[in-house]
Image (cartoon, rainbow, N blue to C red; front, top):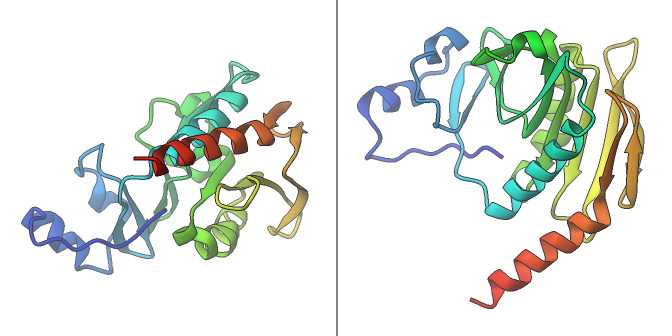
Length: 204
């Protein structure tokens, strides 16, 4: 969920970074930890705060994955992943090797699963750009959860021998997967939760 932002009130140093197209991951090490951004082909792209409903669904998915997480792995949300020298992504949810759990910047080789929760502004990016990037960099599994379809949908992609993802599951029902381990996600329950939040928000 990334949208380029240009605000006159931004710190001059940050404004300078936003104007560059040759940035590397190393150039961003001093950025504040709470700044939401991605580095895309050398360009810094800031992200607006996600709606609370998006965060709630991300947390529910992370909790479902974490419920069966073996001790050799860890589940995180919005952690920086180095795709290459000029590209840094932040999946909504990810599974990493436990050995990388103290790193502020995670190498793509330590990622077992990347999950993106789609918003209206990120449809093509999540379905096309990130899917290709994660596959080329060898991340074994990729999930796309579409929050804005009539019923929240789940798509599981597994990496093939040709470094291309193949869709293994597409559903809006309760789903159980066995990669990276057994995880069950109650999509109808998430849809009801989403609809309830939106309905209450619309009353105010």
